[in-house]
Image 1 (cartoon, helix red, strand yellow):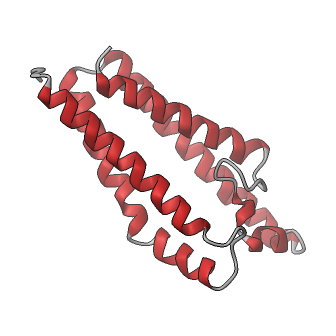
Image 2: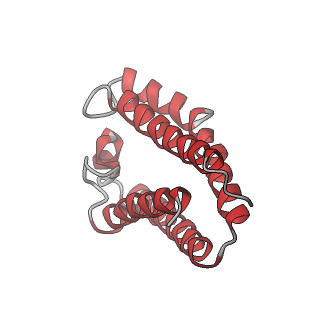
Length: 148
């Protein structure tokens, strides 16, 4: 099994744990549940807003499931070039977190709207770590001399 497949399996397991959390314990402050946003609990007081929040949580979880299923298909049937380009696509798509999501989350964190305080930095580091692992997997794969 090549390094890219191993990294993709790890990423799929991480994302699957997020999906389980979003579907079965969305209010949790663990596993990237949305409980760290203070507004999640506040939304419960307005049924219309809470219905929208719940819908959006399920939308995110469903989208993650689509990506997991696609990555599993790529791991099983994909040629090496497809796996390499999948990792590259994941790097660029995950980097978009820093364009809109991170600045907004950082502002909420600074305004005291996230518990625990400083979680935006933790999440930012975690996502940077995932990107570093993907880049390292590509470097190892190319260094091994594997041909696409």
